[in-house]
Amino acid sequence: MTDPDALDRLAGRLRAARAVTIMTGAGISAESGVPTFRGADGLWGTFSAADLATPEAFARDPALVWQWYRWRQGIIGRAQPNAGHLVLARLEARLRGVALITQNVDGLHQRAGSSQVIELHGNIWLARCSRGCGAAPDAAAAIQPGEAAPPPACRCGALLRPAVVWFGESLDEDRLDRAFTASRGCDVFLAVGTSSLVYPAAGLPLVARRAGALVAEINVDDTPLAPHADIVLRGRAANVLPALEQRL
Ligand code: OAD
Image (tube, rainbow, N blue to C red):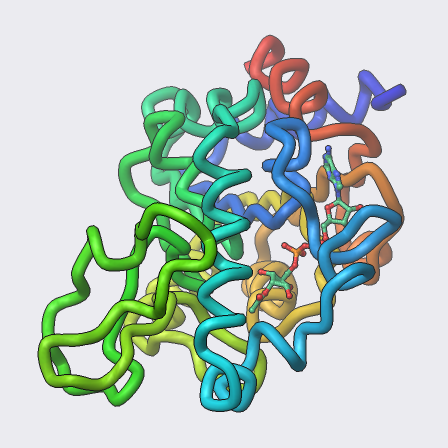
């Protein structure tokens, strides 16, 4: 059960805030049926990140990597935004200065109606040139019927790759800059459904805290962020966020 006093306290701080930064992870989409990465049923329990989510894996076996991403597209395509995504979309209009940062590549925030999402780890529905030729990302190329379809090709002749960030790669500088700016400039930073293990995203709430923001966390489990958070709300995002919205 989420502590009602903690919910009230966070609601009060959100109402008073001039700028609110929210960062989500895979846990926000769990209730939509999209698997998380870590934990009992997490993707990294069944699949090897080294074989599927690194530049080396793509160089070795691009067809396997595309097959895995298309399988995930299938799951995400059948999923619907849940109550948590919908609350966060409404908060854009309800609160002042809302910035939404996500580590998710599923696009469910946008489908729920959030208009300004900083996608730190990219988007599974987009492809880009694996050689970095600079050709505009082709939205349709990432979505091929059938998991076993051959990897799509760029206009320059190289293979296209999913427009997501893999292990060992840097994040897009502009997005990271915007995420740091939003974290440094907010009065309240809310981390939702992230294990807070993957940097640089995991560092953003700490940046906010050092700059004087109140840091709150919504998660079903304990995380390395919890000891540094001012308010910890234990529970599912799809339950806690609607309860929070009712108090705003
Ligand atoms: P993880 O799978 O590491 O963590 C998901 C978090 O959500 C865990 O802390 C769970 O306790 C929590 N959780 C699960 N269900 C929840 C629910 N219904 N409500 C609230 N919390 C819930 O996912 P991320 O933290 O997003 O990166 O992972 C970060 C990055 O690591 C991902 O973006 C991905 C991954 O490897 C790349 O692929 C580059």
